[in-house]
Image 1 (spheres, rainbow, N blue to C red):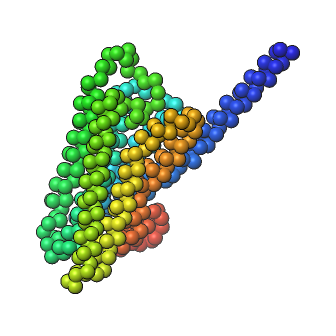
Image 2 (cartoon, rainbow, N blue to C red):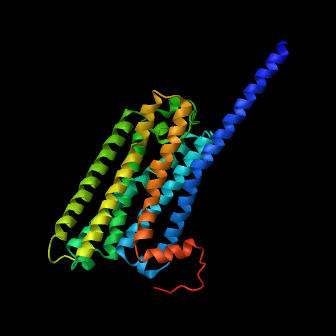
Image 3 (cartoon, rainbow, N blue to C red):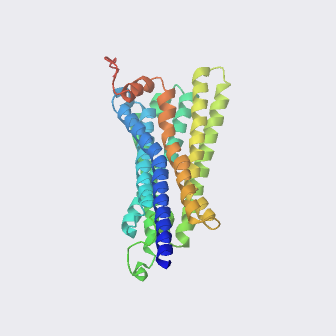
Length: 319
């Protein structure tokens, strides 16, 4: 009788284990599919922006390429971390540190590039006669270098903060938890710096984008301003402001999860983190492709041509 009860208990436990594993695989697949889809769209968009000379020689398309490149790379790294978490893969602190630092680097590129893109639209609307002399390919490349240098400096400071931690006390560099930004944010100084830097970047970017939007709105009332150009510039800046807000949400992802983990069980935290991953990380990273791919009259036909796997028999060669 005892053996029968034990066997029945083991069978129930095994069924629950298989059910939990199947549910986790199904949930991971459903949340991972949007990321793979948008990675494909972003990749086609990047190829589109390199396929024609008009894109390679126009400042706003060069800035868009930089934004898409950073978003795509960050999306790929986030998907890697997500797969490692879903498969319960435990790595070492150095490997996890490199992945998370690269994620931080590419994540910071987006808001800074959006600021430069807003300034470019501001100059195009408010100073149309000087736009060609101010917004040159050389100046655009210099702005992109500054953006990457500033983001790299942030990563360097984070590395220096990590050096103060007594790793010899750990006994082993093998992690005991899943790799994430929270897991390698060691010490109060690192957490304080992260909050201060994030606040500084997003406040500065928000003020810049808002001022650019107000400037374009004021210019739209001027009789000498092209009304159609001012309206398009205003709509573009408004979309950039939305993108900036979504980027801020992704920066707040970690603190939100930490606060929820104190009140909710681990199983619910994992599902909430997966849902946040899709709506906070994945969707904002595909907005640029959707916004420019559908709104821009120059990009749209070429993008659709490549998305349809070149089904058209002929395509006019522009540039």
